Length: 261
Image 1 (cartoon, rainbow, N blue to C red):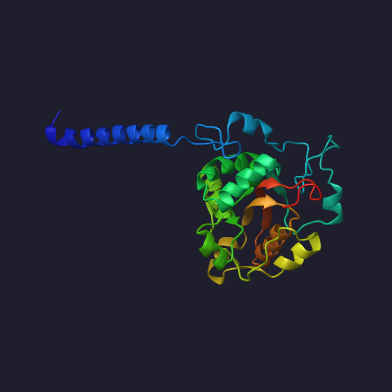
Image 2 (cartoon, rainbow, N blue to C red):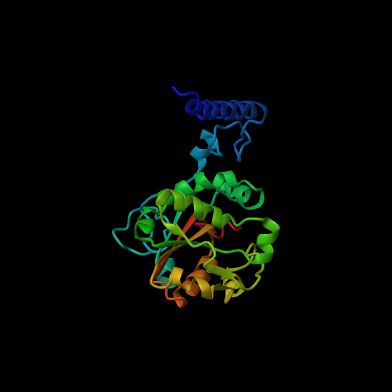
């Protein structure tokens, strides 16, 4: 083997070995802890015991809202919520119920810089929203207002959208939808107050209309509670001539009276 051609190869192997050794030393010094119970965990963000406590949403569920049914009522039967108050978006899907472990994951991603959780959470979301993603042209994360984005430094919905985009191969239009008006935190507001709070708060950027017009859009967010934010975003996307809008979230509140956020 020629010395000139073998030297870069040797350097590459040495760099790879050094990276493995450095990661091993770091894992010993600072082991990854389960975000829920703080026990050591290998790479997934939650330990096996906490993972087993997550309530993944599986069929049967409302084909419109994705709300799980206690029993199978038959094909295409809508929930009472979907009949009484149909949303602007076409369908909603969620990976898990918003329970204690899901809340811990969401808060860690949202408030504690745990962006390392996004790939795992995004993978679960991609599985839950497979039928939506198979039809999708573009993923659009629910945006933060620029002031909140400045203070938080990243958008958790954007991190999830990027992870889902890598899983599914669907394009992410991260800047297509803008939050043009600062809104209050939705925590503690009633359903009517939530809807009023986000009314007119979202708009598709004029220079990004081409990303939306005629496209089948999947809106990405971390949690769906009353659906007010998703509905306001969907209306803005439909005004920009989106062909259809679906919603994919990590967790949804199944009973908002028992699990307020």
